[in-house]
Length: 354
Image (cartoon, rainbow, N blue to C red; front, side, top):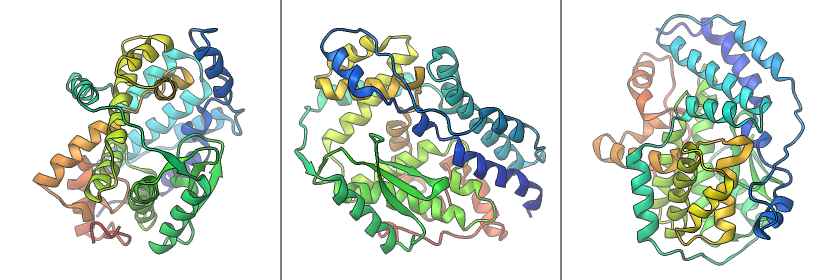
């Protein structure tokens, strides 16, 4: 049996730290609208973004996590890497705007896109026409749909709120989903986001909270590729994806690859435009890749999609993948821990795998 008690202290520290160390919140530019106007008008080549003031002390997080000793066993190894990842995210937040630090840290967490993935993204973009769906659905309607989906799946302690943040985001540590209050959505997004945000992200996190260690709710190190791959795969399986979305995921890979190659913002924007993207599309994708100085993780969506599609054919044990926010690579350990009774089977499952 795994020594759960020996990891409890670190587990609690990780949860507490994750509530404060929120990279997607702190690296979102607060002056994007103004910089976009200047950039598209040709007044500037490379935007200078500013960010929210920090609501916590990064040094306190670092000192607390570094002071905790971790057992030298299989679960301890996972905790050691998770601690490292949170410390790296903490470092990114504390050094927003420093390209060298931010890019090095994110590559350590997510790795760079492979040559094969970039080639696949390039092929997908060149072979798929850029046809944008009409967007008339309000953020309020999306919020209500997601809140209803949470209740329908038994997650009464989760909530959805409108936010200034541009992207729809799940904050597992706070049990909440945010929706951009100023965005308009396509009709397909009502069901697509219920699958993506609730059916995958929220339900896997909720199952993680049922486990004796809450790291399974935060996400085991390396889980994100599987997490986003599952979301894309089940969008497709429930007929809630579109060519527009697949182009977007492919273009994210190109944007990340541009940063990895050392291209500046203008060069990344121009490269994206070469794929027949609109100014708005190219701008948004370039911002995602260059925010904070180069927060490059967006290649994991398309990469994970390919891995999950392969997993569905070779293995297909989605029930175990819903034990928490785990990666495909964690399945041997998780299966053993479930079998010995250390971990519980998934309590919450979406309708599309029941």
